[in-house]
Image 1 (cartoon, rainbow, N blue to C red):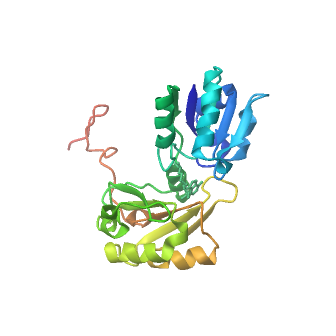
Image 2: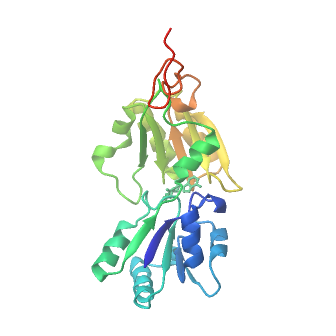
Image 3: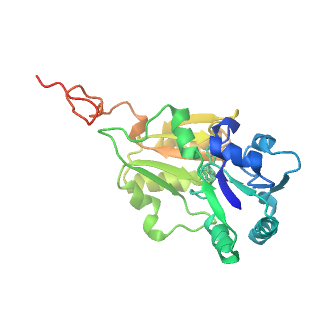
Length: 252
Ligand code: SAH
């Protein structure tokens, strides 16, 4: 069996209980060494084989999984954050399906959740926005043209950009030309939940300059939108005059 496990954003104790149990039971771990905290490998049992996928091709990863599975061994494929976001897992699971190798996925805490925590923020503020756009700038991996940052910016929703910290000059322009005012609050969250975590608060117009000043080119999320500002409305859910299935509202 192959388990695709979300390692969480960095801090080793942000893996799920299920993910930890799967690591403890694994005969082989293939981890994404560029981003997964190596501290998580200390959960491996003695004799567990460990490979860093940063040095492997897709074919090599699949070959290891195929052999382990044929021997009845458990493999954990450890991906950063949640495997379902920019995890490149589909190309692996399709190959495993074709080979008849069973697999399951264990979710993880995505870095965008850790970034909200680090910012002490709520992405979906009443009266501001109820939408989070998760996207990336086009880099070596293409992004379909209809999803260009300018058009997504028109919504003025919360936007979280993965894999884009090295492209901020263009991103900042696109965000402003697409609809965010230059003063819209923004933040660069570097290595959320790691000891070296850094939070840089700025405006959309200042993103590139602030990233350069702080030497940040990767392992960061760019968060944009009014959710980082001061104004919002109170929720209806906890309003005294609002009835829910659990609580009757006070009517004068
Ligand atoms: N599956 C992962 C994302 C993998 S793509 C997840 O759910 O988080 C890798 C990108 O994620 C990085 O380039 C960076 O933009 C972001 N990232 C991953 N871990 C991060 C962290 N701890 N802090 C900030 N950004 C992070």
